[in-house]
Image (cartoon, rainbow, N blue to C red; front, side, top):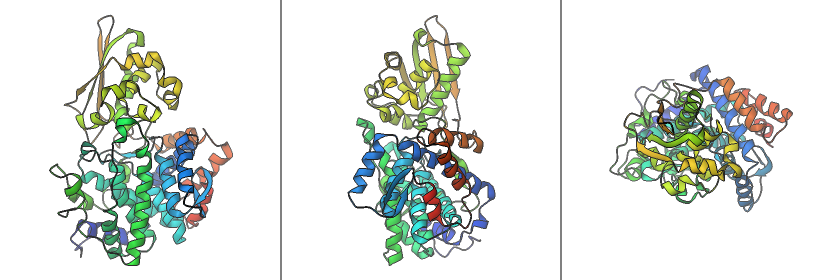
Length: 463
């Protein structure tokens, strides 16, 4: 495959030519193998999400529009392909435990996988074609997020929703047989659907859980319109009223990132799998708190003060407003509270899904400790290239101890291994499914890339 002398100069054209020409043989084996494990992580999380109330609410809402024949991950339900994509996105992302492309600040699988799965089953595609489309979805979503240079969060947009719609459109477009011109149109069309507000941070509401599923649905819709002959602006990224000019007006951004190094640098390999079920911005702080607790034998009762240094952009998400972060209103609120995460880790010596249950949220010891957290700007961190964090603890005996996690665990410089992803999958799916079901799903996911129909894969992953 060659990208020389592109006939389309717009960024959407470069993406389209790459996506239309890509062959599975062009993708390195290590990328395909990592892709299977990212899918495994996502499917395990979808199963685990079925135990939470939000999954039932989403299912009931979508049932309003009638049923269909498309399977849903981890559930017995069948919906239309677009509604199944919405629900699958909710299930993958609902616990905020899913993968994140760190520099793009984007959850890439949560939109790319539902879009690829629905499009592949409708098209009668094989799992080999589905896996390739998923990889394309991740690559495009990550690059669109990278173009924002960390700025989407700063102005209140959720890049998973914004960037994910473009990745979903390309993934779905590839599976529906769009040529390069059609893929340009699909990107142009989905640009008018690309949105997602962070206002949920103010009151702990559930809108973020919907963002990647909605992005997947937008991608499927845009691809269908493009296939029917609908047109979209070719300069959807870099144009005068394109994505970056409108969403990041007056702020630093790099639209050219969308078309850089396609086929030579695989952003999928930079995608981080989460070791904790919390906002990725908090991971370094959980690790730092646990290191200090272990190395210095810290008892929560002996803590006089805690100072946490974080870059101001992620700080807006997990530290403001302080009164909301000291006393999270529910488990989802707690995921986005740096003070709660640090305090729970110090008090309990761990941070698992159990630390998000009602008993932990009401624990007076954790809440008292959270009030002692002071947040300061971090001038030595690596954001957005990594989510750095520093924790300093002042103890009752006068000692002051500190630890910095400059590169968060899960980052491509400190990745979870494929074996660790399998272990995580066993833990998440094991919360709701028996061993036989877990093995059936694991085998189906890790066999992705053969000539079996994608519809068989969807059935294997159905609850």
